[in-house]
Image (tube, rainbow, N blue to C red; front, side, top):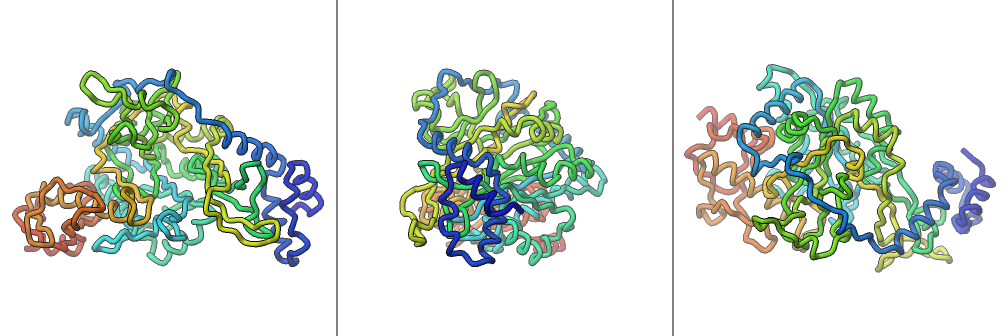
Length: 502
C-alpha cells in the first residue's frame, strides 16, 4: 500500500486535493481504510478520467443520421420470419453444442435494485409469482432444464457453467443468497462469480465526489466493464479449461430470458458468427431503446438520443420501421472473440455518461442526499464491442415471449414488478392453452389468449409453469391436454408427476 504523502502528491497533480479535506478528523482505522481505497485507484489516470467526464457531460450527443443503415437481411435470423426448417436446424445445432459442454451463460448482475426501491441485488427480487420465486431461481431452473433437454436429445451428461459478473455492491449478498438456497441445485463449482471494477463518480466541474469523510463515491464501470473483468479475474482461462467456446450473455432483470437459448446459439454457430445480438421489434419510433444497426458500415447500437425523430420514423415498402431492431442486452460471443477484445480492444471502448443523484458530504462534513442530479458516472456498454466483430449477426425474437425487463417500482407504467409478473403468467397461460388446456381466470371465466401486461389491467389467471417442467412450452401436451385449470395453478415437478400418474 502506498503512503499518505504519495497519495497526496498524486491527488494534487490530478487537481483533487479536496479528497483529503477531512483527513485530520479520521481515526487511525478509517485513515488506513481510506488509504487502501485510494491506493487501489488509478491515481495517474484520475485527472484524465475527471476531465473526460466533465467534458462528456457538457457535450451534446452526436447526431448519426447521415451515417446509419439497417443491418443487411442476410445477417438476420427471425423467430417470426425465418422458415420452420431453419429454426429446427438451428435448435438442433444449439442443443448439440450444449450437449458437448461448449456453451456457457454469463449474467450481468452488477447493479442494485435502487429504482425498484430495494438495496439488494435485482436477482434476489421476488415479483410476486404464486411460487414466490426470485429472478435468480427462475434463471437457475432454466439452466437445469436446458441441460436436461440437451442430454435427452444427444444422450449426454452436460454442464452449462453459469458465470455471474457482480460489483462491490452485489457480490457479497449474491454469494450469501446462493449459499442459503443451496445454489438452486447447481454444483457450486459450476457457478463462477467475479467482480467488475469500480470507478469514481465526479461533479459536473470534474471533482471526485466524497461519499463520506473517508470514502470516495464509487460506481461500477457499466456492463461494458465485463471485458476488463474477464481478464482481471481469469474467467477466460476458466472457460478454456472447461472447453467453453460460446457464451450467452444477458442482463439480470429480464424475467423472460431464455438461458443458453439453443435456437439463438445454433443460429450464430451456423452463420460462423463471432458476435450476435438478440433484438425485438420496437413498439413505436419514439420507444427509448437503442437500435442495432450499422454506422459507417460497422455494427453498432445507436441510442435513441443519437438520431433525429424523422430518422427513427422512417418506414420501408411494407410499412415496417426501417430502424426497428431494439437492443435487449442479450448477446452471443465466441470465447476467441472475447479473448481478442480483452487483449486488443478493451482500451478503445467508448465511455458513456450517466447523470445521477450521488449522495455526498458537503464542505462542512454534512451528509447530503441530493434531490436533483449532481454527479457523473462514466460507463462502458457491453454492446460497444460489436464494432470489432468480423462476422456480426442479429436474431429477432418476439417481445411477449422473450423480453420483459424489471427496472421500476410498482406504480410505473412499464417495466415494473407487476408487468414482469404478468408477462410471465401470460406466457404460461398461452403455453397451457396451446397444450390443449382450458385456463380459467379468477372469476372462473375462460381466459382470452391475448392477455395484456398493462399495470392497469385486472389480475391475470395465476397459471405458473416451473422451468424445471418446461423450458419454452415443450412437453406440456401430455400433462395438460383436455384439463381445465382453475386459478391459482402451479405446475411444478411434483404436480407434473401427479398428472402423469392420473
